[in-house]
Amino acid sequence: MLNNLPFFPPQASTGASQVDALYFYLIGISVVMSTLIAGLLAGFAIRYRRKSRADRTGALDGSMKLEVIWTIIPFLVAMSIFAWGASVYVHLSRPPDDAMSILVVGKRWMWKLQHLNGRREINELHVPVGRAVKLTMTSEDVIHSFFVPAFRVKADVLPGRYTSLWFAPTRPGRYHLFCAEYCGTRHSGMVGWVVVMQPEEFQAWLGGEARDVAPARAGERLFTNLGCASCHNPGSGARGPSLQGVFGATVALKGGARASADESYLRESILDPQAKVVDGYDVLMPTFRGLVGEEGLMQILEYLKTLEPPPAPSGEKPRP
Ligand code: CUA
Figure 1 (tube, rainbow, N blue to C red):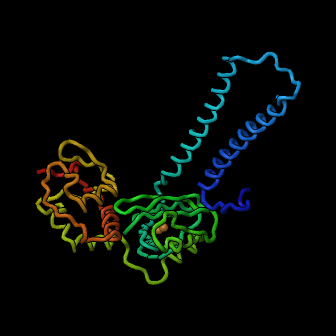
Figure 2: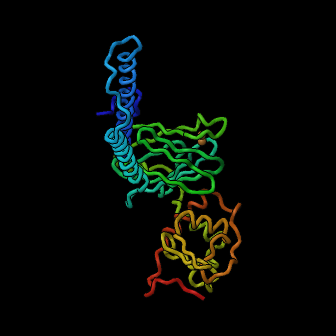
Figure 3: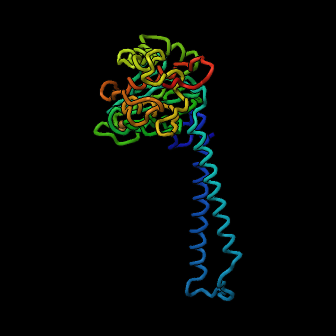
């Protein structure tokens, strides 16, 4: 119904109507309150102007009832904004488990995207309609921001860490993609398109043309070439913790702390091995900073995600 409003981007994702509904609720409250206040102000100014003969007896000198009413009503309105906003926020910040994963690297001044089967894109993102898509994003240089107005999603893309964003497109078409964080002289040129296709069409597109090796395979290659396997393979004398099933697991750290082995943790462990040391191991690992780029890191993480936990009877990791 709101698809053809002037000045409004089309609604093309499941989250778009939720964001718009909340937005119009806020606008509605603002309009009602502003009109009420301005109307009463003008009305009283005219009615009680100096020369008017309006009845001025019975002026209130304080009323508990009024105070309570005009405290409770705005309180309830404010809480409704909070509750609604929080529920939309929570929904938008939790991608569904079956979301299709896509890797995004921002750099001055382009968007580099890669699908998990290896297909790469620059400043264009092809996705199927009706399927949740999750982007894992980082930057090679400065802060960028991935913004697709038609999906009502925007997230900063930061150097040195991962951020993510998800959406489920609802209508085929071409939608603007912007960088929404000033990132240098050609920031305004850091734009592109999100192309939403029918699922069959998308599958044909994804499988067609020359494509790169899949990120997980490229990561496996890096894992071998960088010598990670010599310490991290289960049979290597356990100089480093086994990485079988590490992704998403909870890891016990030296000193008693625990960490959840998510993308940020694994990234930190590769670039700054001293930061969080797994309990029972010494820091023998050198940093790999400078030896592997942002895309390489993402590829290694994709490889680690494919490592199933060992079928051992106990889920505990081997300890010396
Ligand atoms: Cu990248 Cu602005």
